[in-house]
Image (cartoon, rainbow, N blue to C red; front, side):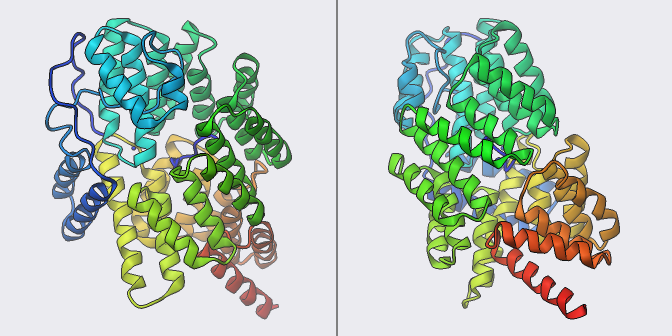
Length: 492
């Protein structure tokens, strides 16, 4: 599937664009360990609990430095990178960058821009690579260096489609989807066959809630550049419109065409996520196993496996796996999932462990916000259940004002309900389920809102649908749905 706002994805600071030309002869920025990044987040979370306002903002700046082991402070210039787009530089092998080892790609790009500082394609590769790296290690401060590298590329070759496509990916990663669409359109004016721009255009339209246009964009991309990146996005567009059968078929087609371990891991994880969302946990676990056989360190597959384990009743296995995930990439989704599993287990000390996960979410969103990232959707979802309901409502309204998707509709509905305004929430809950997209959490939220609004018959239907679709969609949510159904039955 295409990256969701949690986007996963569903995060980073802005610095002055460096001049074009040779980079300074600074040492390669150090890369902090995963444990070091998590420790930095924990220190920041503790500071955040003691103070707010300007103090919090200044702490976020310090956290950014800690997360990058001083790379920003010592003049990191966008030279450390991860995976790059195909064909961006004559001297850097696209196969190594896209299919090969991530660290090898980083070293290759670092070496190349030092030797060929006027290679605009290599700078564009670095910019896009930084975006991808931030997605894998949960460090949104990397986006600053992506921005600078892309600007370097455009200074060397104004209007080159590779850098414009990189800017589209960067804007999407920062959740500025209007800008992402604009950059993608400009890149496609120069190169109608740019795979990265075609994919970013689909992502932007999806995240702006323009689903019919996204479907057309996916069809165009499939004609121009059929392949794994386009297939997975095409499948997600179909899923959003309720066509799970086609989404599944397209993903299997993508898996059959996967050319290397990275593609296999990516597509098999997408299939696992699709099947898990339909309550087919055994099938989902087989797909995650295939993904991890291709790349045993692929974090989205580990997270998906943990969620499937929890849904299938293996809470201990799920906790162990999610602890591994958040130790390496402390992103809001897995942090909240781990916190809820601790709450569900209820062993001595688990409540404190859960609170720590939710505090780490606050720390991560503060860092991302300090870097210019729109984190309102992440904030709304986490705060509605585990934080300040007033803050959840503020963030949900802001997210809805910027982009009207099924996800922002659901977030606003739930935030309104948690704030005691269920009648006002109901139209948004209905809108979240209006496209045909089947998500058990959305149905659960709708059912709880209908129950609070006195619409018992509709609430019963929504809650039953949620539990039939995906009975283990959330350890706490599924428990609440079952309890609400018991109340409704008792009242009949």
